[in-house]
Image 1: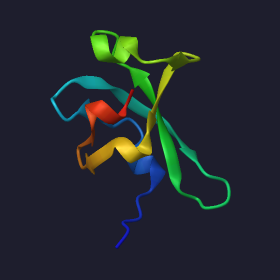
Image 2: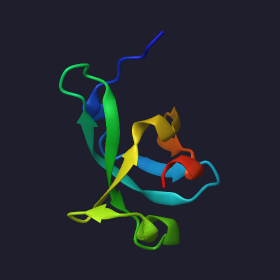
Image 3: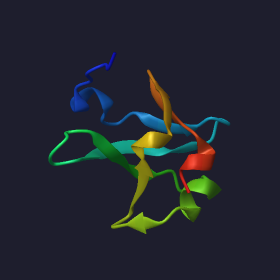
Image 4: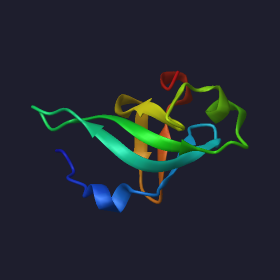
Length: 84
């Protein structure tokens, strides 16, 4: 069963790795035009975090594949191994 989440509810949520590192906060989502599935998340990086600084940035934002998401509640938890 797929949960439907309003993108507005996700905006601004903190993105945290499964080992507790705060990568940044969610700014936007990349959605496939035809299927409507979320492909990736655009994140404003936490520049105090070495992992976030090391990720490729496009126009100041980092792109994290949505397939790396493990859980979402107050924060969005991502698999650190899957974000590189």
